[in-house]
Image (cartoon, rainbow, N blue to C red; front, side, top):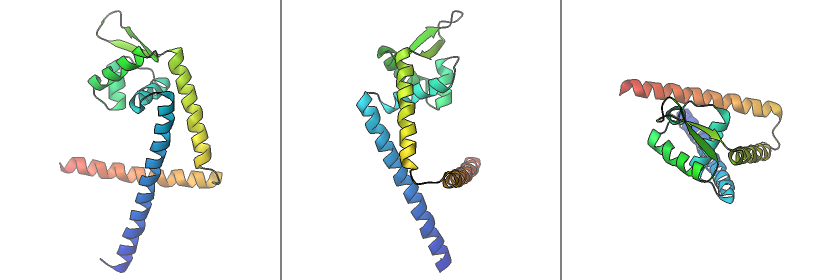
Length: 157
């Protein structure tokens, strides 16, 4: 490997490492917040997804979240038991359940949004609007590159 290639490789590894440790730290902060309100991360993710989207069924929700219908069923059962969601069977077919947030679920979603807004404000403190925009553009480009790599990998298998 040439010296320039080594330097480039080392710089890229350092960037990737920083992205990974930043993501882990963000995850830990989120976990601590969820612990304090007594909800598991997977359940929280379901609530946030339900708040953003209307689903015709549990199967649609599972597909959207890229998890198995069985996994969603277990999570929804716990959320229903704790009063965060309500399931309603479709009149024409009792096997299909519509899922919606209860008032308790909507309250938790609003509190979560406030938490995320505050987290973002603190994370990007000292960044100008232009710097935040540039960072988003860089991350979008990285994401697009990884998506292309994933497609290549899928096609070679």
